[in-house]
Image 1 (cartoon, rainbow, N blue to C red):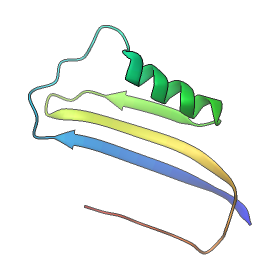
Image 2 (image 1 turned 90 degrees about the vertical axis):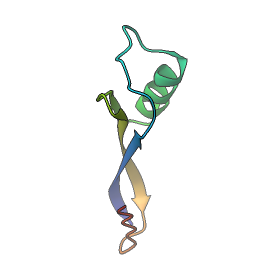
Image 3 (image 1 turned 180 degrees about the vertical axis):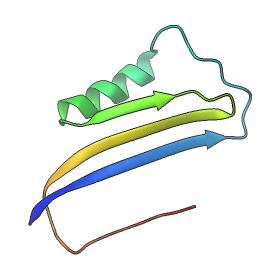
Image 4 (image 1 turned 135 degrees about the vertical axis):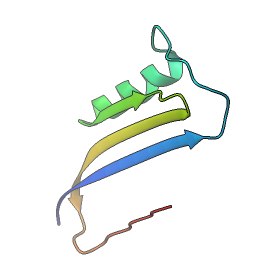
Length: 72
């Protein structure tokens, strides 16, 4: 067993144009604080064509040799 890093990238496209909000809403705060309590980071950006999140967590005692790469 070893520590592994999980990086989750979430993108939403094809909806109405996105405008950056002046302050964080409930959902953003919930995600950021939940990840932070687990020692990770969560960053969001709002390009005009959608919403993007990058969430990074360390998986302690993760089994080695197991990999899942999902590319769309």
